[in-house]
Length: 239
Image (cartoon, rainbow, N blue to C red; front, side, top):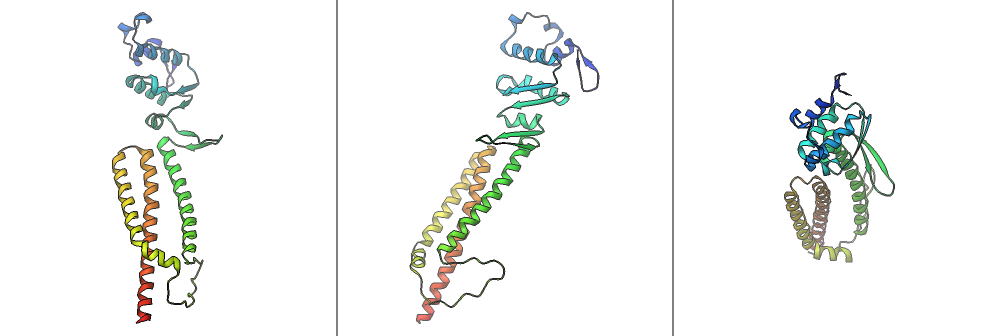
């Protein structure tokens, strides 16, 4: 007999019934069982040993849906520790309360919660890193276009000759083409997001790309406004 969640015990016959072996089938010779029934019986044999630790290696690869559903229910009541290796996010959502993520190059990080909780934590960290990287790239781009970023109260710009630099002339001639290209990329990415459906991993990646494309478009629009205002001032000065 093995202990259950209520403090009592389950007999071998009761466990067999729980794993879809009714009394009439419990005396069937193993050789006459189907492949799925044999896997279910093997799993049951392990559980009848009343282990306090279970190691599950990709269990959803070998178990049918019925057996997997029964196993998930059993794990809900299991008093010991369960260590599962799986690529099945739904199984991990169902049975886990802590994730160990192998992130490459010997790095292993632990996250409290199930797989969905883990993805939310990773996504938040990725967005924070992405924002920091974008800010760095934007700062470099603005410096390259003779626009300075200052901290605190902005200083009044020094008076400058009313003419465009060579870089500004190049940007002014190409800016509308770049804006059109950026808008098309944004539209295409939106379409990809609609196409991926429930693929959470791909959708997360596309959302990150979406934010970068939107910021890029906003930067181009700001640059377009600046260049057009400068061109108007130069025209008025000449007039």
